Amino acid sequence: MIALERETSLRVEPGTRVEIACLSGVLWVTQQGDLRDLFLGPGDSLELLPRGRTLVTALEPSLVRVVDAVARPRAQRAWWARVERRLALWRGLGARTTAVIGPRAAVAE
Image 1 (cartoon, rainbow, N blue to C red):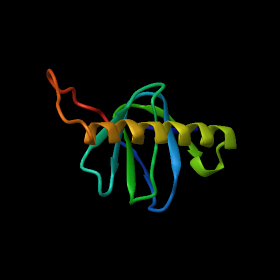
Image 2 (cartoon, helix red, strand yellow):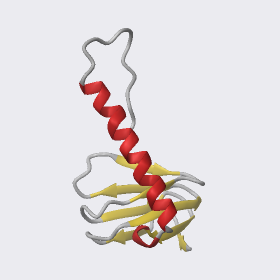
Image 3 (tube, rainbow, N blue to C red):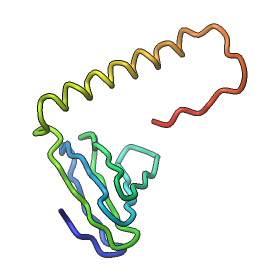
């Protein structure tokens, strides 16, 4: 666990694949090459892809858990792989849709 004071940051270097979990407080996550700003509250987690430098900034005193995503148990990685495949199939269905009825809901990524 890492304790971050308000307005202090944790830098994750490019090429590092980790999972960031917010145990308490509020975290602001910005990733190089990603235009989104992500916010994590207690109980939220995010797997960082090794695409570029990432800054994790505490907006208030926070506790952060950082876990090497590559070293996660094999069963957990297999479960995530199944989820990612299903999401890819689901997203592919939208590309083959010939008509949309009703308002289209925004999909959070």
